[in-house]
Amino acid sequence: MKDDTEEKGGLTRRGFLKSTGGAAAVAGMTVGGLAVGTGEAAAATGPMPKKWNETYDVVVIGSGFAGLAAAIEAKNAGASAVVIEKMAVHGGNSIINGGDFCAPGTKLQKEAGVQDSPDLMYNDMMKAGLYLNHPELARTVADQAKDALEWCENYIGAKFTRLNFHGGHSVKRANQTANASGSEVVNKMLGKARALGIEVQTRTKMVRFIANKDGRIVGIEVRTGYKFPDEKSGKTAYIKARKAVILTSGGFSEDLKLRQIEDPRLTDKFGTTNQPGATGEALLAACMAGAMDVQMDWIQLGPWTSPDEKGFGHVPLFCERLVGYGPMIDPVKGKRFFKETGNRKERADAIILLGHPVIIMGDSYSVPKQVFPRALEKGLESGAVKKFDTLEALAKNYNIPLSALQQEIARWNSFVEKKKDDDFDCMIFKDARPTAAPPFYAARLWPKVHHTMGGLVIDKNAQVFGLDFKPLKGLYAAGEVTGGVHGAVRLGGVAMADCLVFGRIAGKNAAKEKSWG
Image 1 (cartoon, helix red, strand yellow):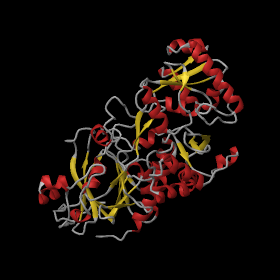
Image 2 (spheres, helix red, strand yellow):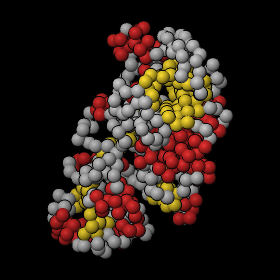
Image 3 (cartoon, one colour):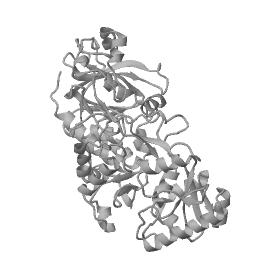
Image 4 (cartoon, helix red, strand yellow):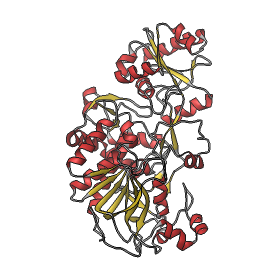
């Protein structure tokens, strides 16, 4: 929607720096835990655009799970909405997600005889998060995850066909999409959004938030025709949000400078599972507008990634399906070294402590039974997953001491038979069998940066808070750009729940806001 009205008296980032003096302004900012501007600073006077190029009730930044859910719910609540995406394609990390949606009490759980509850999921989230989770936020996800999953099924049309397990959960509760990819949900949400008349503008990068004299977020400056990562590309435009802006821009795993500020260990020797656009500039722009950040230094590494493929790859869908069914081996000693069903941080830390890649393995029973066929096929095709006719061949390929490996496999198999791991307390599932039937399959594992748990402070209504501990009017957020939901560790499969639950909440609440003009 086009709008040529003129507004004055609002805040721009350049105006803020100019009016306060550059050094002083920067000193008042924060990146991850230092002080970043206050609600009062955000209300400092500065020019608003003389002309708004477009106007909507709700402006959503980011086109993944959270962003599309927010836009759909805002539209269904009677608000006009637009989604902007800086990359050339929609979906962000969500579209390359592994497709596991953790929720308690689902149809697939009941069919499998799994007893679960929101309380159990909440307790698992808090335990993994070292109880640093903001309880209200974790509780919201656990309580509303099932409803969000059923919304995806019944309203969006996404299909979930299999139940999986992720380390750190007490039970199997990961409902896997039909294609083992987040694209099953993202693409169908995109179709629904377009059917509702919601425009999704790609190659449109958010540059800064714009606030009025009262400190309310009233719109954004963007660059249209932006070509990542050329910061000089595109043309300046202004989009007005009559009710609210919803930030769903994701995390900052690909922002090497920012992640090293938060965790200096995460140098370029660690790759990422993320798409290239997972950088933190939108989050920092919110901080410059007065938003508070939390727990930015909790950055998760995926312990199931492989050094033998780029990005997320196929090995994660091979590895995670085998935990509780096959052993994880240190190739130098030929021994297990940690429980395979431990949470992501525990396993990643254990691998990094060894200082070299490890392997996960399974046999002709466990692999075809557990691993999604496409992941196995593509992994074998790329060489990241390998197939061996004998343990001897496997040991030779990875330079593992054969005698030690044979003894360890025999010990592992004894644990599988009695369904109790005396060494590391790995959860061994009822349908697991000894790793004994060739051919054997294996893949190397080395952690990659996967998820940034920290981000903007929100409440259960998805309202962003400023450093004055008050809501930053006109700004909501959902998904990985927020912090506090997961504490120190996000459990596998809970990202979809987090994004869909809070994305829907943000969209509904943004639509209820009173129009400012």
